Length: 568
Ligand SMILES: [Zn+2]
Ligand SMILES: [Zn+2]
Image: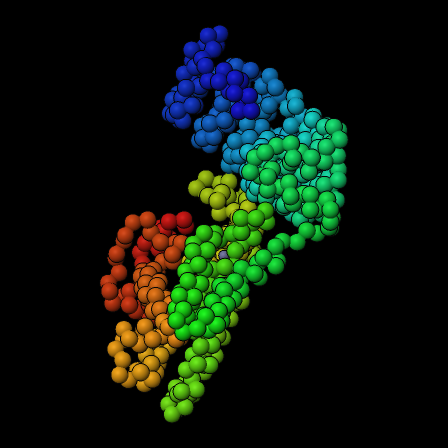
């Protein structure tokens, strides 16, 4: 099989000792030519039981190819799904290794035995762990009720295997619900942590330590090496990342290693704090250098943000809150400046004194609800319309069904237009996008609020700029715009920088809002939009759809392309 390249290569070479008919059948299987396979089996029914290289049958070859129609033809012609090759591998082992659940389920329906092991003591669980197909592991665990802790002949469990091969999603699956024996050792005394460390899979090591605690770092293998010793012996990126962390944990063991909580809060507050510090320093620097300090500080901050990813690059890979911190910093600095530095001059404008605080409170409330209300998470499988029972992974093995409908993280059959967000670690219905500036997904239940929040933010920024400008012209009635700008640059760079940031944000916000209106007007979302530009609704229908959406009503006109978007 594929773990032995020579064996795999041999299996593709026509064997001179077997009949030419078999070679034609084998070629047809490789080329997924159903009619030729059908014709050959009709012409020579004995071909189904014929064994070629290393005792492989045509069904072995078809399972390796993964075409379910061809596998179906061979099974209907009488192929035995439990026929072992020279290594005691059955076609089911091939399907498990290939990670093809539809084919595997078909073999089971034709009498395939999911409990068989090969000459290396490897069962289906070990083969599927190698390629890291979570669908297959879930099926074997839940439907076939196989233990995911069973060792092979070398005492390797699926946990060892996924750690060796770097299968992160499979590791996450195995670590849940007590599915595996965490502390099992292979015949060389290695735990799963030894395996992950040896291969330099730093994030996987972190996931294991989070569940197992750090005491496992004291376990030695048969050669007397701890995981930390193995990390120091190699020098790849992952090993270099692991060495200091493992040393730290050896010095200060903990039952539950915590993620970078302080770092998380630091990055959340960094933009607001850095901006505040540059404003304070600018005040100390005196009138001449205010602008240089504030804009220098802002430039340095934006330069730093440019390299920030949506996750931390440290071993925990936690979501990085710095973008959300930047958005909040802009919002609160503007509000603070407005109410502390401008409002005292507005006492003669009663409507500004009354309305702006109310507007700000409303906006903060909306911000809070967008941040903390459920965006439309889905935690239960879709229900079958006829039987009213929740769908399972077996239902997705039927022809015409997509296995991807099963969420390997939430372990549910997702309803249509439902996507899993890896940052939020949940499935959301009618997913629009994950907003880095809100640290939250925008989906069915908060999409409307999100649009109102963007629109009201734009209005708030326009109000800030309008009142600021009129206030400045009241203070400096004889200066031109340029002169006012230069005066602010030297004497109140904080105000000037906030005006600049708000002006830029208005352009950004308007663009975002127009894009969202285009999606909503057509009945799509950012994630679920058509591959090509299909413009079938009239301008009036699109406008009405946007208005209806903003009022929380069903669409005015239904797009005929709904259900045919990308990713659905
Ligand atoms: Zn999910
Ligand atoms: Zn998300």
